[in-house]
Image (cartoon, rainbow, N blue to C red):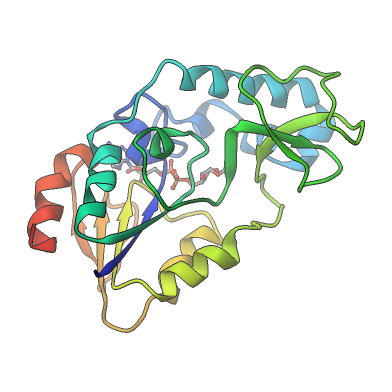
Length: 224
Ligand code: OAD
């Protein structure tokens, strides 16, 4: 079976009702990115940051995977599929995709402030005073700006062995995630699904549609 590596971003979950970051009315238009998504912002105002991610976590219980998430599961019938997602939602899990790497963390997990490897499942709000096993405050298991991306090495390994790279719903503005595209083997097909011209390159096939509306086009390219 050929191997498809899929890099997903906020756009794939947009049609499930989760806001993207950089579109108009996206999360970063309405919030100061450094206030809610950096260690310095967290140190300055932990309550504000916890509230921000508590809201995002609560929202997960109101949304569902859409046709694009489900299509990626279906692809497993014909391809060896690995998904590398920048999303912190759990919609790929709920679509039952088998091989999934979360580059930027997961909303349904919390971790010790002191120890990035002390991670637990967490499905409710994190309150100031909720402690990890090491006695330190729990914080969202999210990779913030300025922090290392621990899953990057695994993601690079996957991309290097891809026969096809499918990129869905990401502006490709955030590094190191956006650099993954540079690790593909020579001359493989790179298919980019995005309704806007967020990212442009000669070496990609750009299907300028929303994720759920691009499924038939992707199938055609893949010979399905
Ligand atoms: P962005 O908000 O930067 O980009 C979302 C992309 O999705 C844009 O290019 C939109 O054009 C596109 N889009 C919108 N609706 C779509 C739809 N229905 N179908 C397909 N595409 C659609 O989000 P990301 O690229 O995921 O990191 O952002 C990367 C990282 O920046 C996030 O993981 C987050 C953020 O800061 C952290 O919080 C650590």
